[in-house]
Amino acid sequence: MSRDTQKRAVRDVFTRTADGYVALKAEGDRESHRELIDAAAPRAGERCVDVGAGPGFVTSLAADRCGFAVALDLTEAFVARSRERATRGVLAAVVGDADRLPLASASVDLVISHKALHHFAAPARVLDEAFRVLRPGGRIAVADTYADEDPARAARHNALEVLRDPSHVRMYALSGLRALLEAAGFGDPRERLYEDERALSWWFDVAALRAETREAMLREARASMAAGDATGLAFRETPEGIVFRRREVVLVATRP
Image 1 (spheres, rainbow, N blue to C red):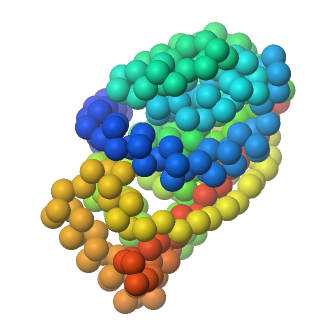
Image 2: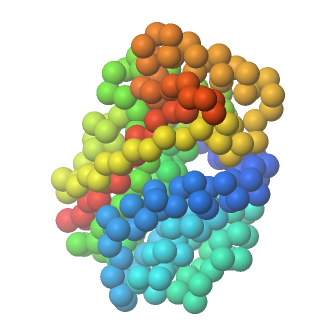
């Protein structure tokens, strides 16, 4: 898929699902948002940009600490919601392309990104841009779900993600995420790992899935369980329905 095709897919998916996404993710990802901010540790007076900011959940938390944060996202529907929730510290919420950040070189102290990397067709290009706009000694903090180190499990995981969300590109294993940051020139990244469980039905609702897609994903989840966890998502049956494991990481690195 070309970059332009991928960007159209992102806009289409998140314009269609924006309302449900905001309603379900505000609470459902609250701990994840705070994990990123605690690891990034914004400081008073720092200038921060949130790349792939979505509706500005994490941008607002950063602004509360540093007082100068910009939410940048490709989807106008999300940028509009960032503006609605903007605090005094959020100076701007703008439509922008992560491949070409509309910022001067060495102009910010902190770049953050929450669960956006797997939507980028060219994540190396995005990280190169983050490196460019950071001042020497500035920090990047990237949070994302990660895939299994086993290639077969990772492939099954990613196929399921694409089935659910056509704008998905790739969940990386931890080793792949580290390699991307290091290739962009960042110093040895520090990691903060955490995980939780979510109902499969919640995952469906966030993406506003049609009935046929829900059924296809249920089949894949049961096939993964029958094969002894073929996706690395640790699906399991409970009295309330199927749940799955989300393994997440925050990587923090410094621009030399």
